[in-house]
Image (cartoon, rainbow, N blue to C red; front, side):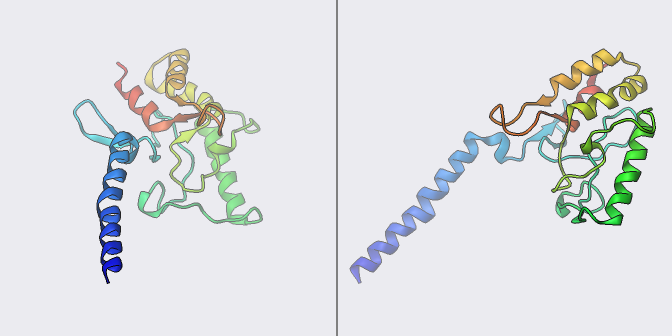
Length: 186
């Protein structure tokens, strides 16, 4: 009986005391990530998260990847379309996205377009676009905002996240952070 009581007491201390304090401490050490990487504007109002994409459709904004999450960028319904490579519905959606992208950005009807501009991510909430995608959108955004393309290009570089650990994955432009920064430019 004594060993059962001691075992229970030790597990209670470890599981109900030490472990929660350790997890909480780690969460505070990485508070930005643990709290959802929230982005606040200059007035302290929450504008979004660096980790979750948002839908921007106005011509003055960089547009994110297409999303199949709920009705599009619905964080409560994260997920891809689950359509396979032989799906006619997927092929039709990509063809429509391709035509829309070329039209919106003033590209020729046979211009190459990066894959992330016409296909959704697995989560449907990817906050990044490729550098190539951002570069193709830059002239449209610059024109709509009355800016020089070079100045928009500088902003793209500033809001490009490098690959994890410097080599895992590709560099990506955080669309929300870039668009918020552009809104702050006078």
